[in-house]
Structure formats: structure tokens, C-alpha cells
Amino acid sequence: QVQLVESGGGLVQVGGSLRLSCAASGLILQFSVMNWYRQAPGEQRELVALIDSDGRTTYADSVKGRFTISRDNAKNTLYLQMNSLKPEDTAVYYCKLGRTTSGPANYWGQGTQVTVSS
Image (cartoon, rainbow, N blue to C red; front, side):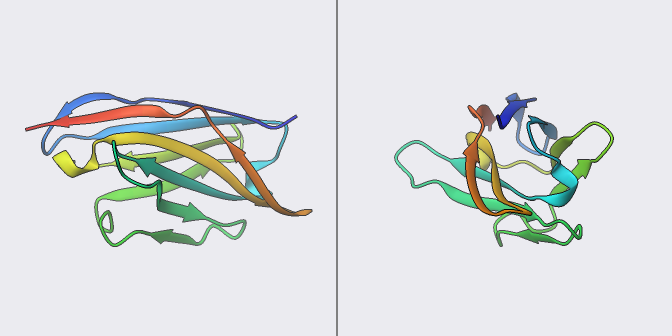
């Protein structure tokens, strides 16, 4: 059974950094397409970053140059390094399994709150 558990959220000042983690079980991250999404109050959930099985990454324009998605295959853990944080980055952040070697997938973690104070 696939389980995704996020951690690392919290309160940070403008310009600060946080690293989110997503510990995965029931799947092998290395062979999967993984995503980070976020949802701010009153807003739709939006894709922040993606990493595919070849390690190629894609970012939303709003976070390019500030956020980095990565994975540790040995720990089977996905990360999102967030630098130069802005108040508009405040949201609940979710990791999502998007695809495995068997095809499309749709598993989500429980989310972790990130709050950027000005």
C-alpha cells in the first residue's frame, strides 16, 4: 500500500528557507513521477514542481530559481528545498505520486503547512 508522509513545514520569515520531506513506502521513488503541490486558503491546488524517473525536473514559474525538487533513492524520500520564501508561498504543501512503471497514479500525502510571515 502506498503511503506518503510529508514533514518539514513551519513558520518562516520572508527570505528564509525550509526543506520539505516526503517519506514514501509501498513504492520505489526512483521509478516514479513525483510532484509537489500547494494549496493556499481560498485557492485551487497548484503544481509546484515535478521530478520524473529520469531525474528531469519541472517548476511552476512562480518558484523557478527558488525551489528545488530532489529525491534520495536510498531513503526513498522526496524533498522540496524552498529558498527566498515570500508571503505568497504560504500554503499547505502536498506530495503526490503521479505515475509508476504500471501507469498513472493518484496518491497524496496529508500535507504540511508552510507559513511565510512578513
